[in-house]
Length: 337
Length: 264
Image 1 (cartoon, rainbow over the protein chains, first blue to last red):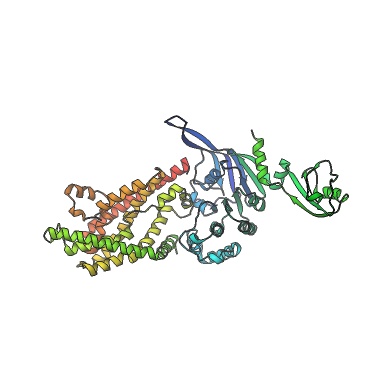
Image 2 (image 1 turned 120 degrees about the vertical axis):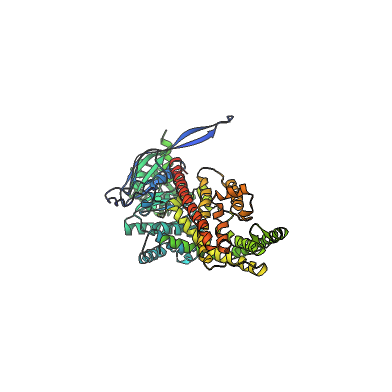
């Protein structure tokens, strides 16, 4: 059964990056029949195309992109269940396909759409089995589980069969299952899909805490930009199987120069405010009380804008709306031919 | 405890929670046992009290043991692995640090241990009360019978796994499963003892692993085949375990390759 694992490969040095993708390519053969034709023709679909990416140990990377951009294919190649068509993959210094099971001891994976828990057993039993699979001592298991139960608030349903859990409860259980063996790299594929705001926040808070405690590398794919904003420092946008943007999250907004929006509520209604050159009035609402002002983060600061407004009127309340990364991603796609 | 031991005990406990299903299974197996025993006894009576080595009591014992083994052997096949392959859930299984086949076998042993006690014993007791059952003459028949049963569970598990692994290549395995079940139920000696087959069919049956799944353990447990004579059939069972285990490992490896190369 150990057909893929070469026996006793020495543990690679921690100097190697957590993830190293070099010119990674993956083609799928798709067979479709053209309209009016009986015979199906096969054609090649390139899901991942010359993808280069290095993730250092301890980094938290949000890997985002539209459906079909190649996110899942990349993750499958990183975990060793899919062989690249061309190019190189190294994860924690290992070759994923030949060293799949060995790698499985060092990484934790959550596929939001699939479960790694035992459906008909109490949640607690899944952790007993997983701990045995990872050859954890009873003491190590109990200590780690205690931390996970507390951090993810699992206690209320730890003894309930998994099939009876709500989606939010199950996802917390899945994350605990992926983190049980304290993996060096955590790969989360859509971990908050279908969760309500409170469940999402709880999950994110714990992921941040655990990462701060253990220096884990986090690799996250999601459609929820809140996940990226709360969990990651770096964002990688994939489009058509290739990296369309790679950089720090804050600079990502500036890079695109997407406008921010300042909403001020004035003490006294006013028809117009004199604004600096690079700011524009988007709307006046509530009969002159609420003013929506658009400006670009790189050209104008909020204090400068506020002091200018303060010269003209008394500000009762204000709020600042950051551009949603979703819109920014769309903008990136829009720019590409 | 080892990973496989933990999985086996967890699987035992998991099945012990399905109380209603267990009770319904016991009831069904017992009722069908009664029907099958009536037909067998009628046939033997029409044949003049004995039919190819089976008298009335031995025939009843054969039926009740067969009914008792339906659940632990999983005579009617399983579909879980094939479904996991089709739905892509097998990716999760392949990402576990424990290899898939030993993991499934541990689950199977835990499950079958529970099913043997909960679904195997009651039909036997019912049979003992209703028709009476023949007990083996030698005490050696008990340990050898249990060993034969373990081998039978293993052979059936491996063959069933091979059928399920076909899901890596074909989109719909239900037809294959039904075909397998029909062939297995006949050639294993589940429906009628294989020695009742015409010679040509008996020859075919003996060239397959199917009699190792039911006929052999039933013969060994009932003592119809004595301890010394059952050693050869047990060796045949062990041989099939080796052959099918190799086939299953190769099939899974090919399936994984296919997944790796063609995608899920």
